[in-house]
Image 1 (cartoon, rainbow, N blue to C red):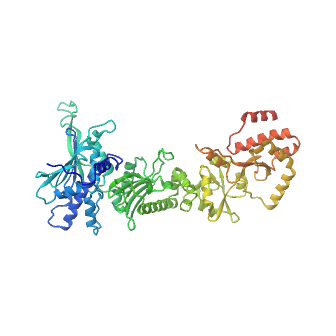
Image 2 (image 1 turned 90 degrees about the vertical axis):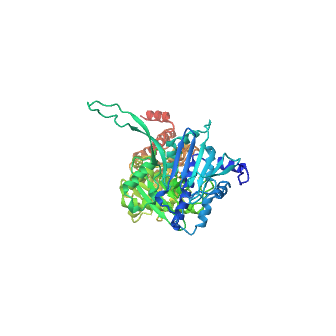
Image 3 (image 1 turned 90 degrees about the horizontal axis):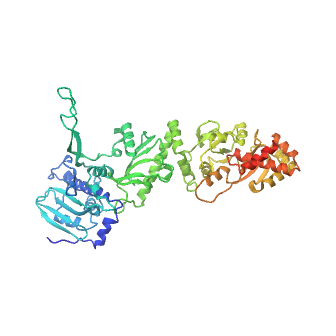
Length: 634
C-alpha cells in the first residue's frame, strides 16, 4: 500500500500544527471530542430534513476507551462518518475543515452549531501519540475505510469492510519522557477529568467504561451464627456518562431554583459560601451569548495579591476555550466569577486564544453594565448585604475609580462608600450630599489608618461642633479616588486637615491674622528651629481643645505620603506640612512669654513638632532627643 504525502506544503507545517499552535497537550482530547460531536450533529441535522435517515437523538453518543496494555486511547462516535474521498480531503489536507464547509453550506439554518471550524484540531492528536489510526464508514455507505499515519511522513488509506458506521480514532500514546508524562492519558480518571474540564457541556453523551471497587456479595455481613464475615472487595467495570451535557446557563431562569445556582457556584469555584448575587443573562443581536455570573460573599485569600487571576470561563457552544479570560471583565470587577458562552467570537487557529475583536469588547461592555446594575440593586434593596460586600471588595472598586486617571469614575462613583461621622456607618456620596447643610458647598473628609484615629484628630472636633458631616477614609486608595472624582454633583472635596480648609468667618480670619502678626518673632524662631521640616508655623483657631497639629500644604497629604512610601518601588516622597498651634490654648500664651529666649523656643519647637507627628499617625523622628527634652522640662 503506497504511502500518500500530505497535501499541505511540508513537514514543517505539520510540525508547527503539532508542536506550536497548542499551549497544553491535554487540549487534544477536547479537539477530538468536538470533532466527534460535529460528526453526530451533521447526521442529526440531515435526519431532520431527510426521512430516509432513520436515527433519533437518543441513538447518538461518543465513546472513550483506554487500553493500558496496548497503550491506546480510542475516541468513537456514531455520526456521519467519511468515505475515501472525504478522508483524503479532510485528513489528507492540513487545515482543511469539513465542519467549516458544512456550516457554510447551511448558513441559512440558524440552529446549526458546529464547534470545529478549523482543520487542525484533529492533528493535535500527534502531540500525545506517535501513531493515529482512523476507522470510519459513512452513513448509508457500502464499505468502511482506514486512515493511518505516524506523523509528517504521510498517511495511508485502505478499504476496511469491518468498520462500523461513524468514526473511530485510535491513538497510540507516546512513551514517557523526562519532560512529559504521556502515561497520564491512559489513566481513566485523568481522561474523565479532562472531559469534565473541557467538554462537560457537549450536547451528546460521552461514555466510558470505568473501573470501580465494590463490596463482594456475601461479605461484610453477619452469617447465620451472628459472626461478622470479613469484607472483600472486587473491581468491576461499568459504563458511565462523563459529561452533564446541558449547561446551567442555557436553561431558562424560571426553571432554575436558587439552590441549583448556589450548588453550581460552590462546586465550580470551590467556595464554601453561597454567592452574594447571581447574574444570569442572555444577549442576542450584534453579539449573542449566554452568561452566568456570581458575586462572591468573601474575597479569596489571595485576592489582593499578584497571584490572583481574574477572568471568566469562556465557552463556545459548550466547549471550554479559556478557563480564565481576563478580557471579559474589567479589573475593578475582577472579583466576579462565572462563564460566558458565545459562538460569535473570532478565535485563533488553535481556539485557545481570542482575537481582540469588536464582539469581545461588546460582551465586556454588556457584562460590565450588568454587574454594575446588580450591585446598585443590591445597594438599594439589601443594604446590609451590600455593606458586607463592600467591606470585602470596596477597595477594588475604589482602585477602579482612580485607575486610568478617573476615566471610570462616572461608572463607579455611586458604588463607593465611606464611613460617616454622622451615621457611624458606611454611606454613599449621594447620601452625604442629600444631607448637606444649606450653606455647605464642599464634601468634607479626613484620612487616617482607622476610624478611631481619624475621630481623634484635632480638626475633626471643630468641624463636628459646627454640625458638619465628615467622611472618614481609611484605605490607602481613598484620597486618590476622591481626587479622581474631583466633584460629585458639583460639590468639591476638601480634606479638613489641609491648609485649604477654613470654616472661620471673615471677622475670625482678621482676628487670627492680627494674632499671628503680633507673635511673629516667636513663630519665626520656631520655624527656624524646625527648618525645612515644615513650610510654616502659625497660630490657628481650628483646633478647639487640642494644642497642636500638622496641616497638609498642597496636593500631597500626610496619608498620601504614607501610602506612596509604603509601595515597594518608586522614590520616597514627603508631604509639605505646616505646624498649627492653637491660639486659644494656654500653650500659646506660654510661647509668647518666651519671646527672645531662642533656646527654650527651640526645645519647645521639637516637642510640639513631635506631638503633632504622633497625632497625625507619623513616627517620631528622634525619640531619644524628645525624651531628653521632656525630662529637662520636667
